[in-house]
Image (cartoon, rainbow, N blue to C red):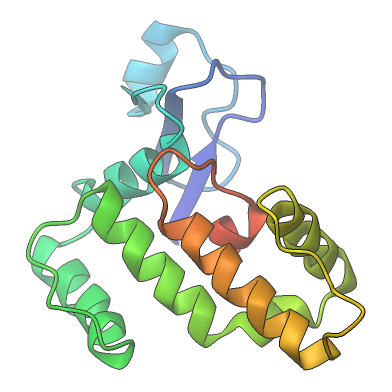
Length: 166
C-alpha cells in the first residue's frame, strides 16, 4: 500500500492538525468515532503563530517516521547548510533549518513570479523595498536575507514557501 498523507480539506479551527497515514482518499470529514476506527489522529497545537511549524514537528515525530532515520535525514541538511547537529527537533530548530534551506535554494522560489511577489510583499511589510539605487540583484539579496530572517523568527506565520520547502 503506498504511503500518502491525507489531511482535512474542510475548514479546521486554527491550532489543529488532522492527518492520516494510509491510502489516498480516506479520512475526509469523518465523525470522531469514524476517525478513530480509520486510524485518523488529531493533534491540538498551540495558537501561537507557530502553528505550521508545530504541525510539521508533530508530523515528523509521528510513529510512522523512524526517529533515527528522520534525524539522519535532517542532519544531512543541517551539515549541508552549516548548522549544528540536530539532537531534538522542536519548532525553533525546524525554523532555523527551514530558513537556511530557503536561503540556500532561494532562487527556486524567486524565479516564480507569484512566489516572488509573495516574498516582495512579505518583506515590504518589514521595511525592505526596492530602492531606485539598487540593482535587481541587490534587491533580491536584501529580500532573501529579510525573508529568511522572518522564517527563523518565532511566532511569524508560515507561508506557502515554507510548506513547499518542508
